Figure 1 (tube, rainbow, N blue to C red):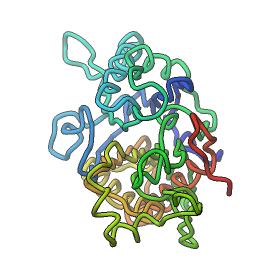
Figure 2: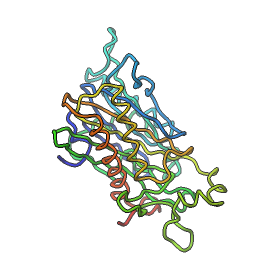
Figure 3: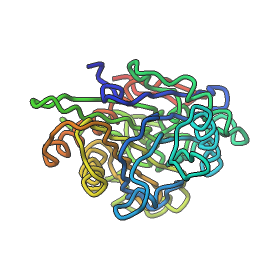
Amino acid sequence: MNGTLTDVSGIRVGHYTDLEAATGCTVVLTPEGARASVDVRGAAPGTRETDLLQPGRLVDTVHAILLTGGSAFGLAAADGVMRWLEERGYGFDTGVARVPIVPAAVLFDLAVGRADVRPGPEAGYAACEAATTDPVPMGNVGAGTGATVGKLLGMRYAMKGGIGSASVRLANGVVVAALAAVNALGDVVDPATGSILAGTRKPVVGGFLNTAAALRGHLGQTVLELMSGNTTLVVVATNARLDKASLLTLAGMAHDGLARAIRPVHTMLDGDTVFALSTGDAEGNLTAIGAAAADVVAEAIVQAVKRAEPLHGIPACTT
């Protein structure tokens, strides 16, 4: 166990990172195919190929999941992931060609670094080339490169988000793991204590504003309409055998991890999305797996801000 998403068999993770432009993308490769579903709870998502992940749709496996910066422009990076997979013979067999299935979701990072540079097909391809089963690098990498949190007062008082990952092995040998790209409107908190790790900073006096509390006052009602471009993207995976209906339930339970570690979450200005993957045939109890998924998602979010570093003048967590 390395404590990250690659603890789940059949998964490789790769990043493409552009620190100068403060953007990038992260690919979760499952070339041999993984069962998948998705639960979108944020009101401002940017996604590709997510409808087919619902129960009852024809295709029941995916070959990669892409998380990317660049707002809607970044969805083009999925083309590079598809090309990489096609060149190696992976994809859904249509009889005349193999079509790789690559659902994707974006976060908004255009306000950091360069707004005119976004991940494209070359970035998606490069992320695939970098994918390994090694422990997942965290912090200012991949889709988390330009990620920020605590944006109630705008970017001037925000803090750095990033990529985080965590995993756990249950007593029966089932592995549950998560990877999160954290770019939330709200604050990231320690689930055990409720203390803010990274979030909206108070002007002049310093310290944390407490976004959730501020939203209950006149300040939140005044400035909230100015805020946009937030989203936390998650991939949760297990080696237990789950069908699409069970994976949809798993993704829903995993969202509890977002609620524990981000306050507020699932807002009208976030596009919070959780993908759920099943790569193996281990026997497991969905309730136990879902409970573990919420735990590792919360830990992945915490790790995302703890591993982040200052970038382009945006400070990072010092805990």
